Structure formats: C-alpha cells, structure tokens
Length: 66
Image (cartoon, rainbow, N blue to C red; front, side, top):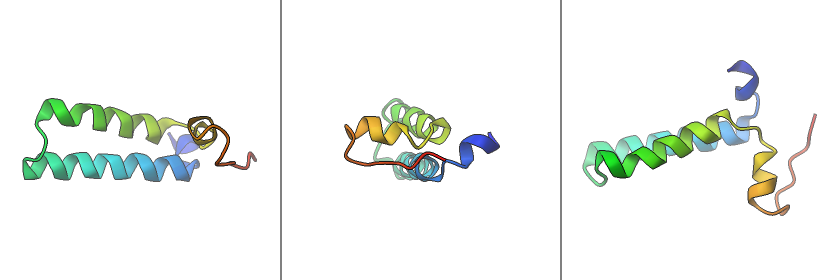
C-alpha cells in the first residue's frame, strides 16, 4: 500500500472520487447502486500507478518515471 501511495497523482484522484461519492450518497443525490461504480473507480485510481494516466489520456499527459 505504501508503494502505491507514492504515486500521488492517481492517489489524489482516487481520494477525490471517494469523497465525491460519499458526499453525493450522504446528500441523497445518488443511491447506493449509483455510487458503487464511483467507489470502485476511486479504489482503482488509489491503487494505480501514475503512468496509467498517460494511457488514459492517449499520451497527452506525460508522467515522469523514476
């Protein structure tokens, strides 16, 4: 887990998705079934490497590898 948290760009995206899904669920904007994909996507980004963003943006966003 510590190794994955070093990839801070995707970790921030994952945490933001978790927060958005939680707040929307709390406020009643989404049902539980509608918020589950957001939680899953947030978890995916939290566990992913930063280099995944380069693939998702088709090479527009370049992430430096260490």
